[in-house]
Amino acid sequence: MAVLISLSASAQEEKEEGESRFFGGGNFGLAIGRYTLISVNPQVGYRFNRFLGAGLGLNLVYASQKQKDVYGNNYYKLVQGITGLNTFVRFYPTQRFMIQVQPEGNYIFGKEIYYQPVKESYKLNTEIIPSLLVGGGMVTPTGRGTAIFSVMYDVLQKPGSPYGNRPIVNVGYNFSF
Image (cartoon, rainbow, N blue to C red):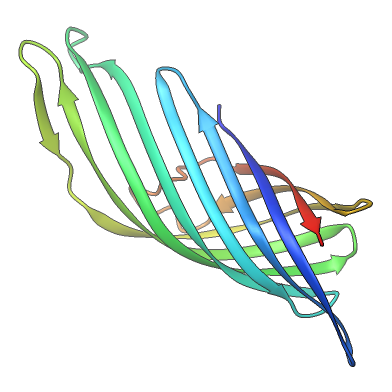
């Protein structure tokens, strides 16, 4: 199981019409073992008002999985990389809850490595796979920022999606300065 930790930094500036905020940060995910995942997802955005924020982000993921082949005899390793772009919109119906929609395009590439009887490597087909993450979560303002817990789901469910048919859980903190 992989848990993503989200860290964001926010910059605030006062305008005559009211307060607006730029923010930056993103997610970091790590799982090590038979299945290895390293995920870095920086994002930048702008909080237009109390109800609406939007921004852009990158997806950078390395994943590998070691297992036996279909005959149960030989070990092989599947290695994949993902680079992608996303944009997101966050709606805050209350101060403590947000709804997020995040369309993405992820370029997926990789290889399969067979270790027996001799080491062989096969390149996987590369492709760009769209995803549409939809979800929401709790937002808890604290002294110097905001704690966030969110659950997202890829509603497109395209074959080869990096998210599969499972929820994506994010826990994080936005730093204000």
